[in-house]
Amino acid sequence: MERTVGIVVVSGTGTEIGKTVVTAAVAAVATAAGRSVAVLKPAQTGVGPDERGDADEVVRLSGAAASAELGRFPEPLAPGTAARRAGLAPVGPREVAEAARKLAAAHDLVLVEGAGGLLVRFDGEGGTLADAAALLGAPVLVVAPAGLGTLNSTALTAEALRARGIGQLGVVVGSWPAAPDLAARCNLADLPEAAGAPLLGAVPEGSGALSPAEFRAAAGGWLAPPLGGTWDAQSFARTHAEPYGG
Image (tube, rainbow, N blue to C red; front, side, top):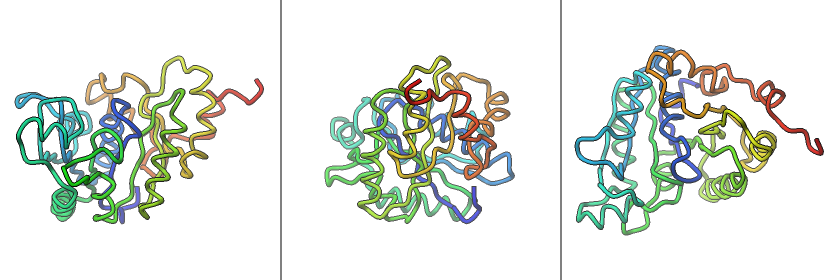
């Protein structure tokens, strides 16, 4: 990743699709390259007070220098809803932007990991991760699932980014299956078109269960050169893609 990129926002096209593992992979590659990396989780939902959150998991897997969490809400719901139901103050986009800038002053790279998709509400005013990215002027790395349905959600996310003038780094498949079906194989060719941005990696399913040492050793092979890795989209497609009409 270019050293001029100090803050990157990581958003999924939905929930439970591998955002945390992709964030950890990006952090691991940057850390191995000698960069100081911090991860910011604006709103952690569905996790108890004594449980490890997503930001903590990124640090554990990647060896990133620091993590920060702005709000934690016990129910596995959209952040705004979870905060309201818990009777706690929500986390707004301006708070996210302020925290990210503070971390960027002390670290080479700050990864801001969203909750769910790009337009999930953070607060009662309708603030979203997209609003935080716009305030920061930061590019967004989109994490998408491999299989059927991903083209529509990826295209919608890309359209929302373009409408707000927010740059998109590209797309990473958050959990590439060990036995990809026809849809997943075809999507290797179709995802960049749907996103209007390059495919920048594919993280194998189950990677989050690796030991930290195994994870860090493998992460560079899952990500393309713009993210600091060695993964090659064309080579991966030749190995896995299903030819049209085949």
